[in-house]
Length: 415
Image 1 (cartoon, rainbow, N blue to C red):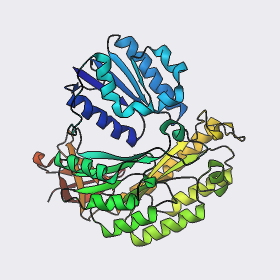
Image 2 (image 1 turned 60 degrees about the vertical axis):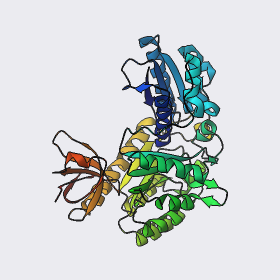
Image 3 (image 1 turned 180 degrees about the vertical axis):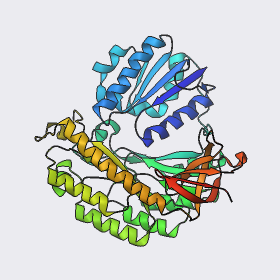
């Protein structure tokens, strides 16, 4: 029995897909690449933009035509956003709502009349790093975002459960764990908050390194920066969805901080961690964004040595307050501003990567490219291409000294 997955959207979706896969494998399924014939086809959808939702539904429609006898399953945020009116005509075998997502494999097995697996199943190792989901849901009322509707109210896994899964992942051979959630900064298990969870994970002896992805500004980032300064196994990388460098736009977005607060946080972080790899999200062309407001966003992006910028032209998401705001900008203007900020981000990333040339860097060896170079990410989330690394080093942490940097990738050889 075979199963294939197609995952749209965020890192949290990918973490959940890994959990789905483990449950199917425990039930005796074999995962096959998406596009190959499979008895079960699972589309893990996204609805952060209308385009993402539409792409998922279009794929489902095409899969039904191509594989009429497969068990076709839809799960994810588009299930909540699209509703039965758009999903039922697609001819799906199963539509898995948010409340049943943790029992996806069980539901599919029951539909197919197959026996249920043991409730305990080992993690499935498909990469060299593992995503550790610790939290889901969000209650922040950002005006452009539908995630609180599709993911529901915030809820966290017990700390003991997170540690148990982390131990199992490390025992399966993973060297890097990536802590993820819908709004990870809101992790809370009784008195334990995100910094407490990170501290507990860092105490696991088998851990190679721990990475935290994105957390909301104005939450626990200062505590995280302090922990980074003390704990060498915690990657000095963090992503902040700042979204704009203009206070009026931030107010219309219903964000929870001012530009001055962001600047103070970043100044303090770089003072403590001069080589901090800091990524940021920015939305360009939000309704009412004036040329002056966009110039302030550019100024903020240029004021700090960001290692990575994710830049998006604003896209109306039906069902959100921002979709009805006055002052909508033409699509061409949104795209033009986004391209200008992307150029700023590329220059900033190149300059950030250049500072590591001639300095020791550690990568997690994930695969080997056609030239035989080891490929992977450094702790600072810079791509690495390293010659003369033995194939037996795949899945290990490997130190090298970069000889050059190009397009945010460090190049060198093992010495």
